[in-house]
Image 1 (cartoon, one colour):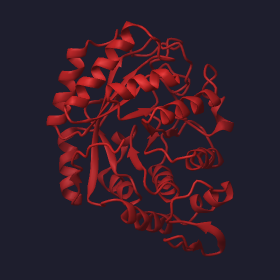
Image 2 (cartoon, helix red, strand yellow):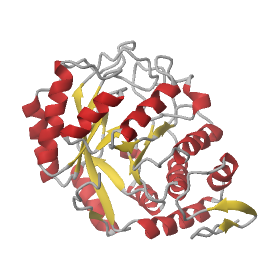
Image 3 (tube, rainbow, N blue to C red):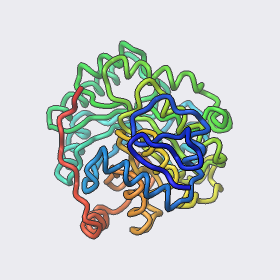
Length: 339
């Protein structure tokens, strides 16, 4: 089976069109893409990627945990949950100066996007939120994209973040809706979608993806892509994570996901959401240079740099620089956000 770009159909499944911006994807169409022969899937995703993006550029991002641990939620993958006995120890919200200094160091190291994560269930209108707004404003004034992941936000809070200069808000769906309740019971799928709606209405770009390797099926993964690709607007940013099992969490014994499964997810995301940044996120530390190269070929065009992704290990910065040079890739320069 071969696929074509520029709105043409998948041979043998003429209802599947790729290469155009669509939000009317049918689940069976995405299933057909996902189950395409892997090399064909990578080739077609690479072709679509080159239609919408500069294939030589990879955006470098830095993610900092600004408030760590003691989260009241029960996400089965997360070492920051107060419900589990993990190596992660709670830490109070960092002060503004510490965060701004970290952002400056990240910019000097080549990152153009600075992401701040707080282990909260939801944003509350208190002194801590005022500090986060200050952080957002100061990082924005440095000439960097600014992203936050703070849990649920209402529309007024999203508008305040926008006014402070927030570029993007991350709120992952984590999985398809049918599998979701096996991972989280303290926040509904609808609540996640409502947060995305508030962020979009406030004029902030949406960063939303998920995690594979939690015990979900291929159908669950297809459900996740289908939900993302049929939002009223595609997320501008789609982080795809491979589970990093952490001692003490319910998923601590989960076997590592195959790199080929991650590559298949990246390619399917690229074909269904052509303009989105597809971010190669958690779990990258386990990938060889060759496996990362296939991720980039399949449509990934962003990586996270720095010692940690919130609380889990990340790739060495020098090794990343050597990899990009070897592959002929360049750090994407900063571009002022359109909105």
